[in-house]
Every structure is written in C-alpha cells, then in structure tokens.
Image 1: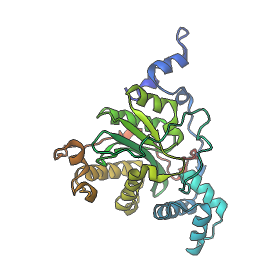
Image 2: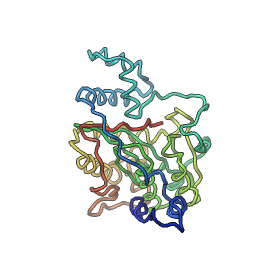
Image 3: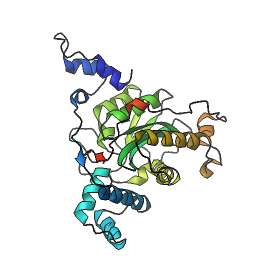
Image 4: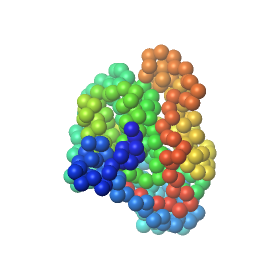
Length: 311
C-alpha cells in the first residue's frame, strides 16, 4: 500500500489502539494525518517571472546568493532589492552552494548521518543510490521534483512531483525505487525530508547504509546536480508547462528518453538503462517509469503555496 492508502486505514475512533501506535504499525508519519493545506498566498506574474529568471541564473551560477542574484537582476534592468530576492529564493528552496561548517541541523532532533563516499570506488549498479529535490517552474506556479538515481549508471529509478516540500512525496519515490532493488549506500543532502524519521527508518529496515552530504556542499552529490542541469536545459526550460498534468507528462517522457534513449559519454555512449541492467533495455508501452498517477498531483497554480525552505 502507498502512503495515502495506509493513512486511510487509520481508525481515530478505536479506543483499544491509539493513533500513535497505528501510525507506527503502518509506518507512516502521524503529522500527515493532521495536515491541512496551506491557505494560498497570492503571487503575481511579476514574482513568477522573477522566480524563473532566478532559477535560470542559479543553474548557471549555484554559488550566487541573494546579493549577487539581486545585482545580476539589476544589471538586466529589473528593479528588485535583496530582501525580495531572498524571500523568493527561500520559497524556491534555493541557497548559495559553498562549504559551511556543520554547526546546525536542518530539523532539531533529526539524526544527521556521516558522509560515506569519501575514497569509495563506485564500480557497479546498486552500490550507491542518491536523491535530491529541485524546483520546476510552470507558466502559472511551480512544483517540486524529487528523483532517486543510481550513482554508477545514472539510471533514474523513481521520481515524484509535489507542490509542497513535505516528506510524503519523497517517501513515495523511495518506496517505488526500493521495489526495483536495494542499494548498499543511499546518499542525500541534509534536507528535512531526507533526515525525517520515516524516510531514514525505511532505509534502515532494508539494511541500507545512510550517507549525507556536508552541509551546503553540492559536490558531495555531484551526479544528481548534473542531472538537474540536464533536465532543465533539455526539457523544462524548453517548455512552459501550463499545469501539473503537462509537467507530469513532459517530465515522464523525458526520463524515459534519458534512461533508455540518451547515450552518456561518461558511460561509453551507452544509456543508463544499458549500464544499470547490463543488457540493452527495451522500453515497453507506458515507459520504464510511471512515478505519478494523474490524480495525485496537486498543482500550486497561479496562487502559490508558502512551502518550507529546502535545505
């Protein structure tokens, strides 16, 4: 059962079994039962346009913070101050990438795991998987995309779209990926979605060693950062998705092409599917990955939700 189905099983009127115990047995987060959609905050077209410009520039210069992004926008004749840029970057989950001292935790109480990949020679599929989240602009609104990828082959195992940065869409992608195999090590950043108890508990239950990047360092998870650049320049920026349905179809089609049709120079001009499976992979009807049922997408639309910051 997926997360939504397990939530539907919870009986709040059952005195013999508390809601807390039911959530533990069903392996779901209790907070998800009480979640109420955030009242949308109006964002005008000017904000949406600025967010798209910021995303383009951030892909080119991920070491730019709010000050430099604001200065760049002013050089492009946009009248914007640093406070506004900082607010929009927080909404998008973007921050300047550089090595910071590991002096704080994304969420108090969540365990931070050490980085395990230093000096490790990655020589085969399913040795190391990695995951990350990125911002996907649309014509009116935006979504967040999470991807789980095999490090060695660059094969995209699972993905999900969401209009909020909650944990559930990351957990759903993880459960789908684990239905296809099991890695020895799973590497992420220190974002609250990946340090959550429900996410790390699933990995531990499958006997997977957990690795987390140094805070603020994109080089520790470099291959998935390269994937974001590829996806955005080859797919997202070429299309103005009108809604969540368009984004799902476009991104799903692209990942099928990326896995089975796009040769990688670093892989000896083989596709990720060929390397991951060790044999040529034939795409069946419906594609290799169907990570989202149409009814599960919630699109932010022209009115954008205030989402928590992506670490």
